[in-house]
Image (cartoon, rainbow, N blue to C red; front, side):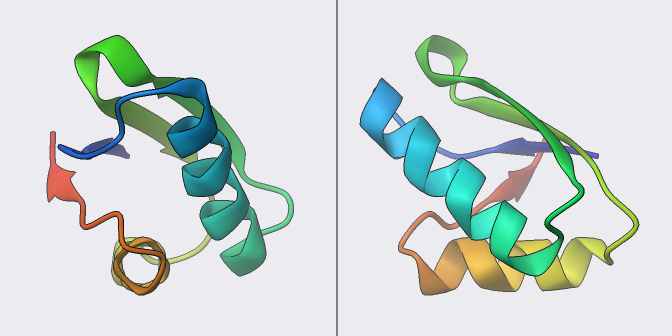
Length: 64
């Protein structure tokens, strides 16, 4: 699944986004692209659960 995260602008943001996703699914594969504000996630967790974790960490996501 892919997400656009408008306020992910740097490496620190990307680390926070990755940590939020891994809190939901420790086995997720997360690829961040801060310059383009994109995140690609391979996970067995539901999209809604990942979106909720991102929102809770102040990184609201949009479907990419």
